[in-house]
Image (cartoon, rainbow, N blue to C red):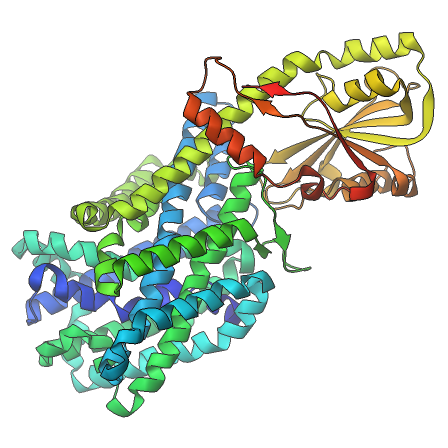
Length: 621
C-alpha cells in the first residue's frame, strides 16, 4: 500500500525539485543571489516549510482529523459541520469555508499537471537542444495519455506507478548526495537561523522569494485529499522513510551546486545530474510528473464525489474502479473538464517558467482554509487547550499567510487564472445549492401532505395490483409527485408501496445497522411504508441493494427476493423559470443547465432501466 501510495499521492510534491529552486533564483531578474547567505536562507526556508506544513500539520495533525478515513477539505468541512451541528450559524459558515477550499483546489488541479509535465520535458533543452521546439507537443501527448488511462482507476495506476516513484526518489537522493558529500557545509542551511537572518536582512527579497518557496509544498492538500484511497499509515510511512529524506538531500545538492557554480541556477536539477545520465533522468522525470498530475486528478475525483453527496454539485456519473477500496473512483465529466483546462493553460503559457507566475495562489489559499478548519475542529475533536490552538494558528496560519502574501503580486501576471477557476467553481456550487432549495420549496407546495394523501387513498379504496412500487423521495412529510401522478392517471396502487428517502451523512461510510429508519406511516395494514436510507458521502447510493439489505437485517417486513420484480417510480418534471424572487435570472439559467446535464437518477441510484418509470409535473424556480 505504501508503494501504491507513492504512485498516486506523492507525485506532485515529489517533482517540485524540478522547478522550485530554479524559480527562486530566476525571480525578479535574479533578486536572490547565489551567495552563501541567500542560498542557505532559501534552503532553510524550504526545509522548514516542508517540515512545518507537510510533516507536522498534514501528516502529524490533519490526517488525524479524517472523516472516517476520508481526507480533503470537503471531508474536513463535513467533520466540522458535524461537530458544530447544534450551532446552525457556524455550521453554515463552515460549509462556505469548505466551498472556498475545494474551489481553490480545483484551480491547483488545472495548473499542476501542466507545470509538472512541462518542467520535466524542458530537460530536453539541456540534453537535446535540437528538439526544444517540440517540448509543448510532447507534453500535450503525455497529458492526453494520462487523462485517457484514468478510467482504469487509481489503484491500478498506483500499482503501475509506485515502483517508478521509488526509483525517482532514489535518483533524487543519489543526485543530491554527491554534492552534499563534496560540500558538506551546505548542511548548515538546515538551521532555522539562516531563514530568520535572510528575512531580517533582506525583507523585500525574502518576500519575493516566498512566492516561489511555496512550490516545495505544492501537493500537500492533494496528499490529504487522497488519504481515502490508501489510508493514513501507508502515506505516513512512505513520507518519512523515503520521500522527505530524498527531497531534503536533493534540495541540499542543488543548493551546493548553485553556491559553487552560480551559472547552474538556470536549471540546477538537471545540471546536478552527470551528463551521461541526463537523458534517462529526463525520461524518468517525465514519468514522475505524469504521476504528479495523478495526485491532483485523483484528489479532484474524491473531493467532487464528496461535494455531490453533500448537495453542492449536481449528481455526476461516478464509477467505482475497485471492489475492495471504496475511495478509488473515476468521474468521466470531471476528467474531461480537467483535461480541457490543463491543455488550455499549457498551450496559453507555453513554458513552466511562465506558468509558475500563475502557480501558488490557489495552493496557499487552500493551505490557509485547511488551517482555519483545523483550528475550528481542534477543541471539540481533541480537547485542545486554547494556548495550543493559538500556537497552531500562529505557526501554521502565519507561515501560510506569508506565502499567500508573497504570491499576491502574481495576480496580474497569470495568478488570476486559478482565482478565475475558483470563482467559477464557487458560482456553480452556490447556484446549485440555492436552486435546489427553490425547487424543493416549489415541489413541496405541489406535493401536499403525505398523511392527507394516505387518508384520501384509504377512503377511495383503490384497486391494488401485485408487486412492489418504490418511490424515491426526499422526505416523508410530502407526497412523491410520481405517486400522485400514478394514482391520478392509473387509479391503482401496488400491493406494497415503499417511499424511500436518501440522506447523506457527513461521514464516508454508514454501517448497515445504522443505515435505516422504518415508518409504517400510521397504518400497518395499508401497505404504504416509508424507509429512510443513510449513505455516507463515499458510499455508492444503490437503492435496490440497500432495500435487499434492509430485508436481510429485518428492517423491512418483506423477503429480499420480492424486489427482483419491483417497479421504481422517479418523480421528475421539467424545470421552468419564473419571475419569482430568490435568484437572479442568469443564475436560474445556470441552474437549469446544470440540472439538464446531471446524471440520470436511475443510473445514480442503481435502478433497473426496464423497471423504472419517470412521472411527475413541472417545477418552477
